[in-house]
Amino acid sequence: MKILLAEYAVGTGMDGTLLVEGKAMLKTLANSFHRLGHEVDYLSAGPLLEVGKLIESDMDNFENILEKAASESDAALAIGPDELLEELSHIIEDNTINLGCSPESVRMCADKVECTKRLRENKISVPKISDEKEEGNFVIKPRYGCAAEDIIISSSSDHNEGSIATEYVEGEHLSISIIAGNDPLPLSVNKQFIDIDGTNPGSTIDYKGNIVPYKTDFEKELFNIAIDTVKALKCNGYTGIDIVYGKKAYVVDVNPRPTTAIFGLDKTMKYEIGKLLLENISGNLPDNICIEGECSFTKYEIEDMT
Image (cartoon, rainbow, N blue to C red; front, side, top):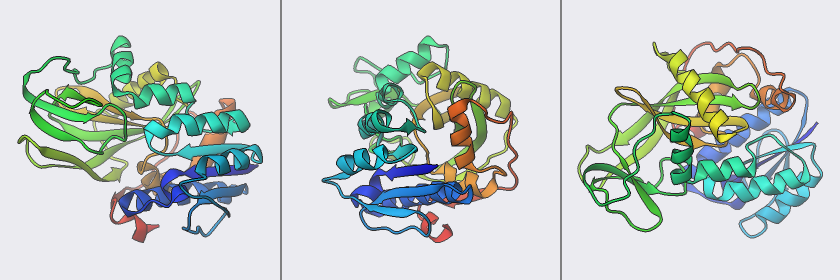
């Protein structure tokens, strides 16, 4: 098969850790499909991978190039900011087989308010969203956007337009990697390195990296929550679910796309991630997968580890 991969940071020429993380995810997927014997194309504004064919793109023409390349591919997968991913997913679905979430599912996951409502309707624990001005510990974050960007802790629920205020939940920061579809397959529980500068007003919450996998006594509970979550949101393909586990597990964010944890899975999972994504098209996923060892990394180290 001819597989197209479109990672937004790489394909538009962004820089910093977004580019480093994006390239790591892109390279992981490209290598996996290549090992399986598939032809791989990828969009890039400059970075070159060891495998696959580079299709030149930039910020101005990314979507146009994606549309043309998708029409010439057997399947495609886009990775990008949640608020932009809906349109990218539309482009893919209009032109080829989409290995990721549908545009409708992406839109639901990207909207923190609607996503929270849908999860609560399905009896999944989520932090309460404050609709009125209150005092206490709250997390202020963009209503739309990636999980660990522009998030602060506040002593008030007061927030600007375009943001939301949720209750601050104490606990362990974890994520679940899962292949979503007709019969979801949980892959791993991961520990997130989250830098929280206390709970003082103005303190930031910053994602630093992962341990993949992370062994816990409540893995089965988390896997069941992950399955219920992706079913409620009708996700498809690789999905990352962020959880804070305190007195119980709270789903704090759903990423309808590959996350950096895929980098650690590629080094520990005894199964090709590319094969899982393709098997998911026909619903022929294995009953379980084997993971051996552990991969610990920060977002600053990924470039040297790839």
